[in-house]
Amino acid sequence: MSKPVVLFLCTGNSARSQMAEAFLRKHGGDRFEVHSAGLNPTGINPLTIQVMNEVGIDMDEHRSKSVSEYLGKLAANYVIFVCAQAEKSCPRIWPFALRSFC
Image (tube, rainbow, N blue to C red; front, side, top):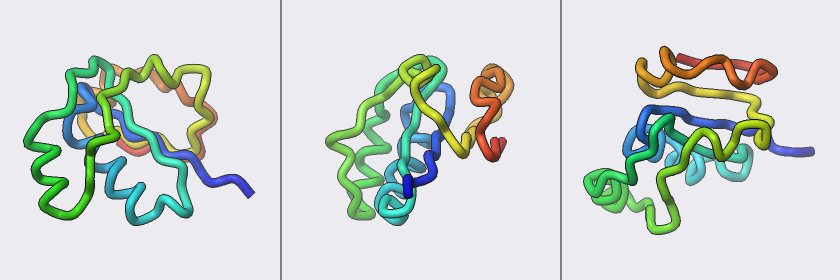
């Protein structure tokens, strides 16, 4: 059985969505396929890396990704917007997602 796919979206994919991806990957990666992206990726904020290192999560393999990398390629079951700007700016591009949280 395949894992449900979760996509966290924000504006820059620099902090909140990166942290959400890392936490779910660490604590639920055996049950979920986890991704994150931004509308306008800006690179990962160094403070995000620092804070995640402080709680024992290595961010070395993470990179800031654009939502366009996933369009038409990812069948997300859950799309979670972690900022209001992304929710306002992003059309419902995953209409078949089981749930879309804002």
